[in-house]
Amino acid sequence: MTDRDISIKGISNQLDEWEEKLVDLKAKAQESKTEETDVHVEKIDTLHQKTLQLREKLNRVGEREHHEIDWEKEIKAIEHALNDLDEEYRQTWAYIYH
Image (cartoon, rainbow, N blue to C red; front, side):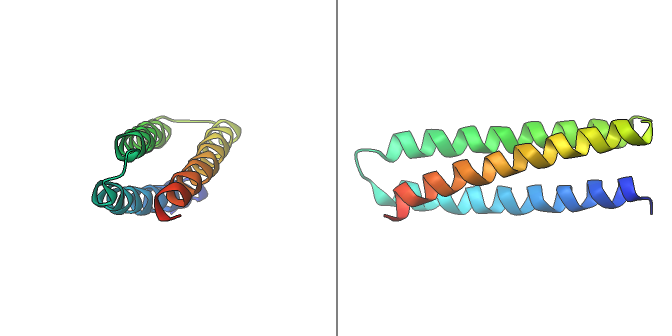
């Protein structure tokens, strides 16, 4: 297994975990039945769409033949997007669990 394969597999596993977290968070948001429930559910749906977009990008990286520097650049961009996703998730989680 190459470094590229290992990176892709690791990020794919992270995306799986994010999708599970978002399913759980959405269920919690729907249980809350507050005035802001719809806003939180919409935000969670947006986060889920971001995970799907990241998975598509990751799949494209895995399918194409890249020069080493190209795939590393793509992986770093995906990792940066995962960090952004983490921050948005934490903010949404804080509103729901406050």
